[in-house]
Length: 388
Image (tube, rainbow, N blue to C red; front, side):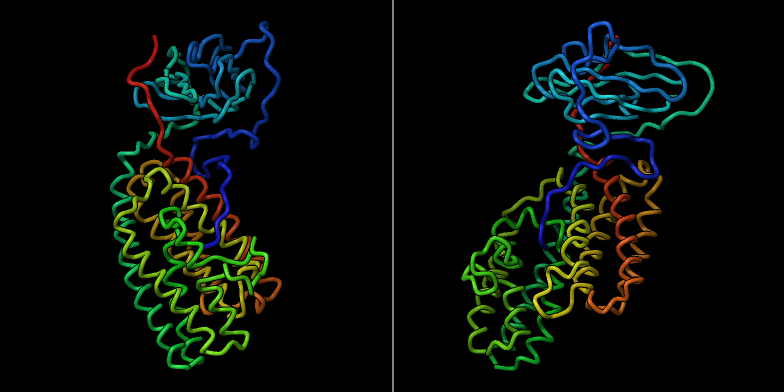
């Protein structure tokens, strides 16, 4: 489970919520002149000084005259549903939010960095006819507790399987049966890769159990190279069972220590929606390029395991997603297409160019849909009431 940080997703595929993230869909512009009407993004005047909202498509400039960055959302003041949002509008900058509005009530909601309370500005009511963006009711951390508990149970059961399969790998090496060890390595490694959404909870264990050679001066021969990929390298590069015994013993001890430690750790509920995207983002970068392969030729099987972990994560979030994400069926269909392309395959090097392009395209499209889950299910701070 090699990790990279995820950019904030830009849009919610199949839904109406639009997120303008810093450095993504919009770039901070110079402070607007006092003559140019703009929406105040700072908490002191949230939603004031703005151009009038109207039916149809429009571009809404948001200016932050405060001293700290602010997140600004356009909401339904009755339900708290979010129509659109901009993250991290910096002090003295202006961001433009483009959206189509229908008849209804609208208010701007501002959350500044720091200890201050969120503020909801004045309510504007638009009359007439036409269709606009639909609001998505925000998710709170409390909403994420039940999915997180379900996922913790999934990880706990997976750690039991991981210990069992890693012990089988160690036994094969201790017996000097390298053919059996190579056969045991893959199911043990896949048992770990299915736990992708928990890696932030595993701490240093993740590096010792599934780390790669990046940053190690000695590469594959560096003493800091441990875990599954170190065993993989030895098994597929002619290393003797006696020299591998020390490595597999360390791996088995680390896996058992992780299982013992896990009940004392906590998966942050706010992290759970992000993992839906991050797991397969890492798969695309490291597995589908073959970069993670240390000789076993199993990166496509690892990709299958990553997909299983992603599917489990989507399933535990499904009660929150079903009423909020019209594109959820597209996520399921994308996961099914990816599974079909991976089925029965092991090494990315054996894919034809056409099959590789088809797989990469399928994963890329799925990632766009999964990024929407991070946006929809991100817990948001809300104020208790709206302005006048």
